[in-house]
Length: 245
Image 1: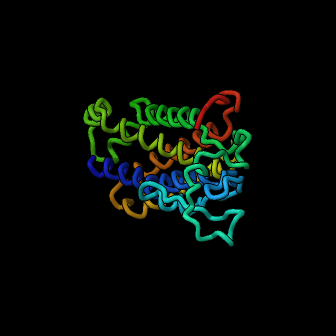
Image 2: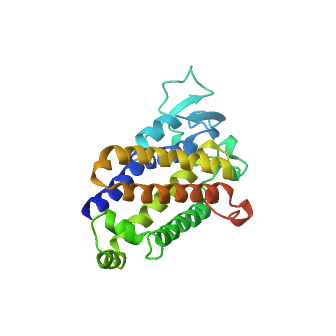
Image 3: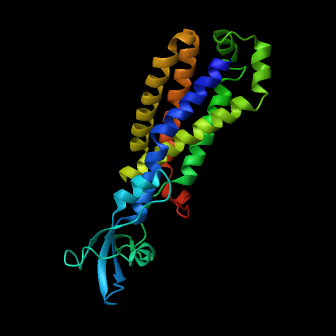
């Protein structure tokens, strides 16, 4: 059973390592991108500047973003200035973001939470005594009573909730990155993530599990991935129109 717990932890780590930093970097990039109008500290006249959003995003993955200008309308003549306008530039609203960002470019928090909850509930039913618990328990070397006792502890549920939430937010984040939130696109993204996770998991741990365990978990996870993709990608906008990033 420790192997199963380590497998779930490994799956969680894969998503954290591959996707969460990318989503955070994209958030930082969106924060600093765009042309901004500020008053030059030297001339007190309006100038247009652009912050180096890529540098901010990359450095922000390791701590506080390092902010510097990428362009200024007074450059190249004044390219060696001390960039004292940076604090004002950080506060200024980018011209490209003067209007509200489209819903397609927002992380859909509510659909992600609903999708994660649906995937978790599917797992509860899938591994219940009415469906595959006996076969699953036999595959991992547990008696029905041991499997029942395990289901009454908090650790398996916390791990599966964490994995479901992480998967759903990865789907939501990638859909926001792509800028197209539809049920079909959600299915495409979720199945792609599922394939990456399964390949990594099977490559490292396949020999540790019986074939019954593999088909039970593979069937559950692909159904859960499809469910998350459909919900996160296809939940009507009116359900989360007030949802914030």
